[in-house]
Length: 133
Image (cartoon, rainbow, N blue to C red; front, side):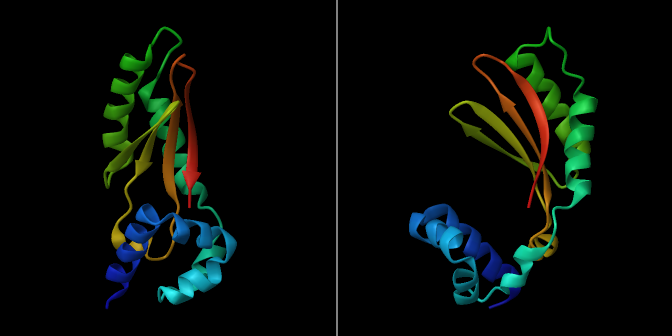
């Protein structure tokens, strides 16, 4: 099995299996080794550039106090297409919407960092840049 397939299977497993997610937190070295992935990937520092991309996205979106969630999210969508050049995912949580930069599979295999934007709503509190690794 090639590296990309292994990595994608790990991602699918972690999304679907709470026991695997718990094991990732309790004993990441064993879980990753069992999945055929080198645990050293967890030691890479957060990539400042990912945070910078998220911050640039928010600056470009130019969300103002007068913007509500609808107008703010529309602006974020336009800016995300420009700054997250490989595309992005949208996650909806109970009190927030997250835009996550999509990473090419070859980079993801090295546990790369991605730019993330978190926006809370209800009441609309605005957005903040972040980086996930």
